[in-house]
Length: 324
Image 1: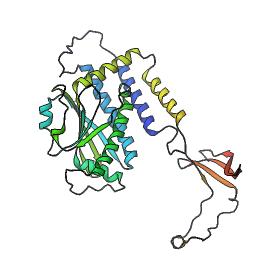
Image 2: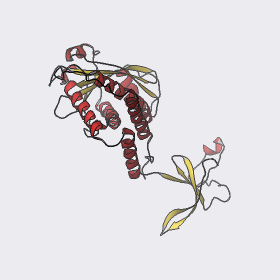
Image 3: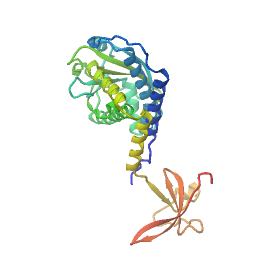
């Protein structure tokens, strides 16, 4: 059976984050007066759009801190630092030498978007994916091997999937990583205009800390924001109810891994180190037919071991109370 829990921590984080946005928007409300805004000025975001993006990116940073920490099995902190609207040329001039650029498609009809991650931070992520510790990575050539690119591509696809889950308007876009490069000349983000929206994050993992820059074509972001406004205007349910329904539906499709534990014994280290094939370990009395069923490492049921149609089976005898 799958190792996936009934409701993942990622889904709980996303649900809580979405409710936080909805509650904040309800408290602040909308201004009664009509504000004039010329959408022909592609390089300019309205105050409402800037506020919406700030909320979205703040929520994204919190959720990524939880979900990617679990994915890497180490502590990762992501903090949203700010939003600006440089030209494409200004964005290029702000890039470090040999930047690590993760190119992905947000909208198939527009230019691609780019995550730029500090190389030492990316190398620390790779180290964690390969089972290493939290120490700072040694100096590394800016050129990544094919295996390193494949691992980072998998990691950033996980980041994009999390981003899509935190923003309902992105759920139908299914963004995926197109390529990973350290060559600025390979960027084509300006193919449909010189205007971009630039968000700055701070990634901290182990002893490595550095910026992460998300550059989105302005036209792609405008479409995404308008789609968000349309969804909010037409939905009949509050945001919290929508996400509650989504998490509930996901839970119904999930599977849970049960572990049948026969017994636990303690052995001296000298005996444990000398165990050979064929040795017999004595179990506590009364464990021949009694097993404990565990879910995610937590005892849930007592059961009786036996056979069913020629297969080993366990019959539930009683639940295990959490306060016992």
